Length: 42
Image 1 (cartoon, rainbow, N blue to C red):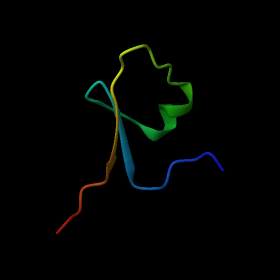
Image 2: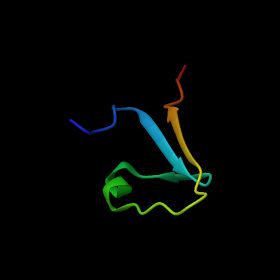
Image 3: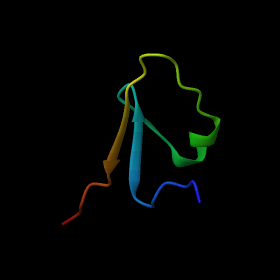
Image 4: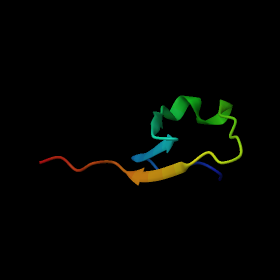
């Protein structure tokens, strides 16, 4: 369905992006995109 799974953290150039802002995001050449699982608690 094109959506990211819950609990996934996205960062662009070492800046975490809030999920509500992902659809408005414009990527540029050489941007670094990271997909990370949410940290586990304990």
